[in-house]
Amino acid sequence: MTMRRRQGKGVETRGVALILVLTTIAILTSIGVDFSYGSRVSLRLAENSRDELRAYYLAKSAVNLSRLLLYFQRQIDLTGGAMARQLLPGLQPGQTPGATAQKTGTPGLQAAGAQGTPAASATPTNNLGIRLWEVLPIDSNAMTGLLGGGDVAALGADRPEPGQPRENAPMRPLEGGPVHSFGTFEGSFKAKIEDENSRINVRALDNLGDKPLAIYTQLSAMMGDPKYDFIFNEADAQNDKVRREDVMVAMKDWIDIDENGSAIDLNSGRNPFVNAFGDENSAYDRYEPRYKAKNAAFDSLDELFMVRGVNDRFMAAFGDRLTVWLDLNAKLNINTDDAQQMMTNILAAASNPADPKLRNPRLLETIVQEIKVKKMFSFFGLSVTDFIEILKANGVAVNPILLSPTNPGNFLGATSDTFRIVATGHVGRTDKRVTAVVRYDDQLGKLLYWKED
Image 1 (cartoon, rainbow, N blue to C red):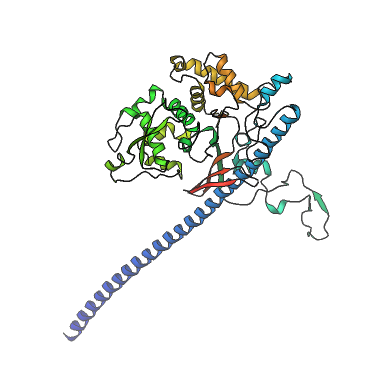
Image 2 (image 1 turned 90 degrees about the vertical axis):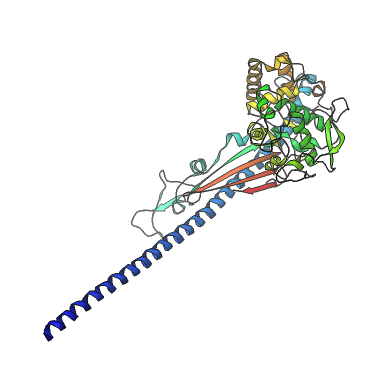
């Protein structure tokens, strides 16, 4: 009996120990799994932070390369102005080579220049019709192909024979090996350069002289097509239905320095915007949340969303044709490759943008094709004179103000000095985008805007 009781107690002890061991193993397993998961998450976060930093500097490198390319573009533009003055001795600053060629009879150079300021200033007088940012891609793959893609150790004119020490070893020439290296970084980058002068300068709505009328003409031509009626005939998220003219008035009121509302009066003289003696913030008082007009210049293109009547539909249709970074007196560059902007330029240059003849898509397409051909075969690029002559040859009545290059109200030009750079760096699963706006100066361009996404 004593032996049986002892054996029974021993069996009960071994069962409790098994439960304790299993419980301990389960607890240690859960702790280990949690620790392993936390380590993997921390490692992945560290990798993402590393890749994000690399992507940012790759995007920044693309911006710097773009600024270097624009520096060479400015040198080419200045060279074009110097060549034009040598070939056409009578050319004066701000005068097109076409006008001088017609007077001197110089063959092959009629109407082949551009308007601008003297070559010593930031904006060159003339150019050669060469737009480097459209010819040379800012892309890491293209750069590697152009500049070489070998490792740094392979650089040099000679290398030792296999199996021989580098010191005092017979050398053999490189055969098919790379002679340049474009870095040893991981990832890729690319950049796109966009000409801001070929867009409508919303900032000049609040300006002196004929500039507000010029911008009003351009905006009216851009928004006047009946196919955009749905943007202005439907209420937006604020339950506000805004007409075309009201959008332009709201843009002007947003940047002017007073609190009074404006109105449009085309019979008022050089400036179509007149004081309406109303409150420019009355519409914003009904919004949720309420706010007031800024009464200062735009800081970015995204700020336009704050203006009454500017919504997602508006920006989807017109956002790529507007700019807020140009100088107040900058002219609209007619050398653009955007077909929609070309058509807007045609309508803006017409004496009657609402002429039913200009609603003929075949006519507009014909004019656009002639402009492209003229740009392709013009030595000095497409000038304003060329642009006007193409319109007149197709039966379009041109605004009389644009017929005189020296008229202060002439808002057309053929040169650019401000550019937007959109650069993207990619490393692993991480992308980093940088948007920069630069303007010509004696260095790599004056930085006007910088945004990181």
